[in-house]
Image (cartoon, rainbow, N blue to C red; front, side, top):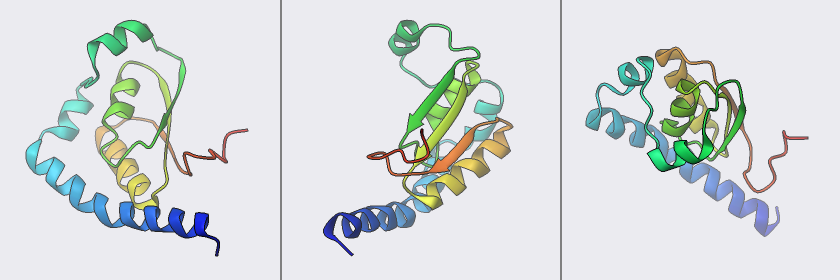
Length: 120
């Protein structure tokens, strides 16, 4: 393996190991996480949503979504058709489970943010 692939695998394995605990701590700090997003919560900087405007029906790409996918779920609650990427398969698995618990339809894919290989 070359150095770039070795570093990439190191990053991926570190995120895979980190995120299950991160999500557990996140849920301890915010036990209503799923309920809040299921009820339409938006946790974004108001200046960002003001600048972006209405995203209803728009396609939005979130890169490095993390397992809590807070921005992903916020944009989806604002009506965007969101696709979310992360380098970690564990992150994507947890984020998909969260989306299912919340009841949001979001596309999650594993990819490297440096290449975004699935995007034509």
